[in-house]
Amino acid sequence: MPSCLFYARFAGVLLLMSLLLGCAASPRLNDSTLNNLPQEQLLKEVPFYAQRDYQCGPASLAMVLNAAGVNVEMENLILQVFIPGRKGSVQSEMLATVRRHGMIPFPVEGSLDALLTQLASGQPVVVLQNLALPAWPMWHYAVVIGYDLPTRALTLHSGEISNHEMSLSRFDATWARSERWGFTVLPPGSLPKGIRPFRAIEAISAFESVQGVQAALPSWKALVQAHPDSAMGHFALGNAHYALGEVKKSQQALERAVSLDESLGVAWLNLGLLEQQLDNEMEARQALGRAAALTGPWQAKAQEELNTLSHVN
Amino acid sequence: MMKKLRFYMTPLLIIAFLIGSMPVAAAPHGQAETGLVSTQAALNADSSSAERERISEILARADVQEQLLAQGVSLDEVEARVAALSDAEVHQMAEQLEQLPAGAGGVIGALFAVFIILLVTDILGLTDVYPFTR
Image 1: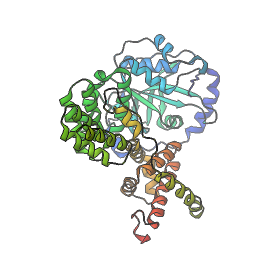
Image 2: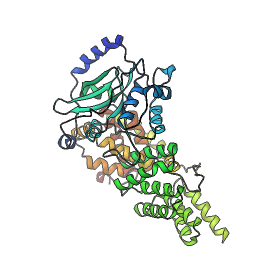
Image 3: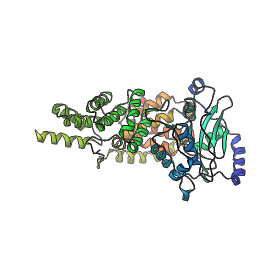
Image 4: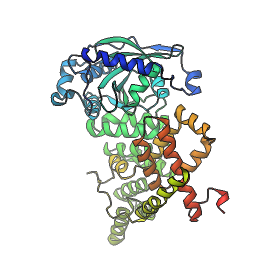
C-alpha cells in the first residue's frame, strides 16, 4: 500500500497542511507516561541516511538495523524491500527484511504513550505516516529518535532531514492515518519494554518461522520470564524445546502451560502427544482426554488421537 | 438516534448469533512435521486471546479513556463487560475497532455496541449483566 513521496513540489501542500493542523489540540497522554518517563530523550547514536527518490523504507530500515548493530548497507536494503512499480515498500516486506537480518521486528502498540515508552527505553521506532489526507495519501516511513515532553515535540530522521522536530499533535495526525503503524527492532532474547504477551508471541513466532527454532529460543525464554503467567508463552517454549530434542524441558513447559490455563486445549493436546511418544500411556490418555473435552479447533484431533490410543491397547 | 441504532442492531445481532452458534465445520490442519501442533498453527487457529489483548490496548489509550469518562462510563465496567463477551463476540468487536482506528469517536461507537449486545442478550436471558432487565 504505501509508497513514499517526499518531493519539493509537495512542499506547498505540506505548508497548507501545517496551517490546518497547527491549530489541532495537543493529543492526550496517560498520566503514567507523564509521571514515569524522563522529560526528554534523544537517541543520538541512531545514524541518519538521507533517502533518495522514493526510498524512505530502505533508508529507515538501514538506520534502525545499524543502530541495532546489524552491519548492512542501504544499497542492499533497496534491493530487498523497494518495489519500483509501487515507488515504495510495503509494511510486511519491511518486517520480513528485519527478520532476514536475524533481528525481530516488534510492532508497537498504536498509541503515543507506547511510542514514547519505547524511546525512553532506548529504542528508535520506525513509523508509517500519511503526510497528506486519507483521500490523497502520501505514505512515508521515518524513524522517531527522540521526544521532548515540555514542548510536546518529537525528533525524527525523516526523508532528507535529520533531527527533524515535529509537534506531537501534527505527528499524531499523520501517524493516525496509518492506523498508528510502527515497529522496533531487537535482537533475539530481548523484548520491548512493556510489550503485552500476545503481541510478543506473534512477533517471535513469525521470526521463528524464518530463522528457525534455535534462533528464537532465547526470545521464548525471555518471554516467559517477562510474562510468567502467559500460558501461550509456556506452550510456545515447550514446542521450541521439543523441536530441539529437549524432551524433558518441553514436557515441563507444556505442563506449566496447562496448569496456568486449564482451558488451553492445544497445550493439553501437545502434552498428550509428547507423553504418547514417551510411552507414558496413562499420562497421554489423561492429557488427550482433557484436550478432547474442550470445545474448539483441536477437539476433533484430540479425540482422534485418543481413539488411536484405545485401539492399540 | 438510539432508537434508530437499536432498530438496525437487532436484526444484525440475531444474524450474528445465528452464525456464531453454527458448529465449526472445518478443523484447522496445522500439524508440524514433528507431530506436535506448532505455535504458529495454534495462533492461527485461535485468535481470540490476541483479540482480547488488542481491545485492552485500545482501552488503555488516553483519548479513549477520556471519551469513556465523558460518557460517564468507568473503565473497569467496560473491561468487565469485554471479559464477559464470547470469543465470537470479541472477534466481531475487534474487527469493528480495527476498522475505526483513527479517532476516539469511532472506538467509542464500537464500545457502545458491546453495551447494546449485552443489553439484548440480557433481555433474551442469555447473559446477566444489567440488573434492571430483570
